Image 1 (cartoon, rainbow, N blue to C red):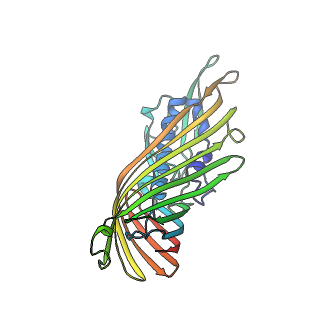
Image 2: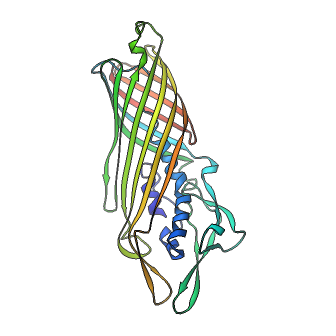
Image 3: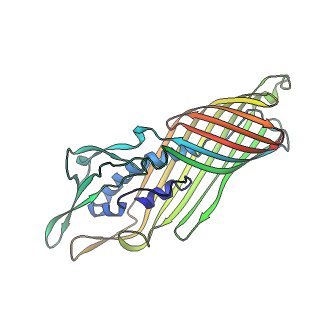
Length: 338
């Protein structure tokens, strides 16, 4: 499972993951069982990532003047609650998986948790010669406490002022490509300040804005060399898309300002396990499974934001906190002018 977590959480600095087994091993129990487990196991991680990658889209409601710009280096982190670290695995819902010990329904680790002690399950499959056979494996743990309960993301962001209170924004992570991994992220947003249209705009102590922002992440992880199952062209492909709709209010002071808002996040993350996997069905036979399954998770919910911004000429520093299903905090180092 280490390979799956790496793709989902590559933005974080947590690369020393502690998964015990690859999800490939669960294919011996059948595609449906492997898919059911993978969906429950991965969903908290992908959901947390979607909240983390939507922080710090704004640091004021005061839109920039025509030609005003800001370049930012931003670091975010969504916090992991205990409820995100485990899920109830009920083997009555599985076809060929049973716990080695204990009741049929037990709490087991998600990609954000840890099984301590290890949890063993028994997989059942049919051998054409010897009949029904069993295999015992250890369920994968997740990242446990290695991230200090955080899901971090980081990126570069730019903003440019247009006319009549409009401001466009863009963020991206340059494409990362190695022998095994290819991943990138980009996003775009449009902010509109309503108070720019009021006659008393210059003397009002506060600004009010609306924001719509879209973020996309995609990645591919080549599994062929490191997979625990024989096969060809094995890979994991991920596609994540989110939308943020945000109302923003802020003060308009010379040096220190405060801002906040109420927003709504909606997003979906889809992961496809692709390629050919040659799963053994006993000593003498095997089965080729092509493009085994796809799993997905979705988020939708209200988010509240509180933040502060320090302006020192060309240099600005901001920090903010978000209250949502996954709470998150963010800091930004910003350079620009009105």
